[in-house]
Image: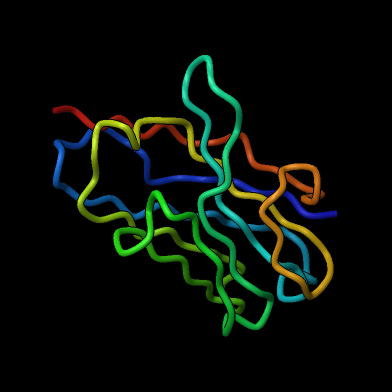
Length: 124
């Protein structure tokens, strides 16, 4: 069982930056691939970026490539999402998720555990 708690969201102007954190409970955090998703009002949850359990492999959505970076610190049971050059269309609730296994996946259904999310609002 893994419990996930996101933090770091807030209101930022377009062009600004935020760093989200996702703290995980459980001694087996290091064995889970981690992902960040987002969901805007009235829209489906969409994949943003994922990282392997070792941290040496990532996959990222085209919409955020070059602006967002994922990283993890297994010693701290934490995964991070650095978001730069934010745009109003990045406004959403951002959720972190964990899945067992070694493959990186982008589908919502492939993830076993989810946090409650943190709101990110980008003003124009």
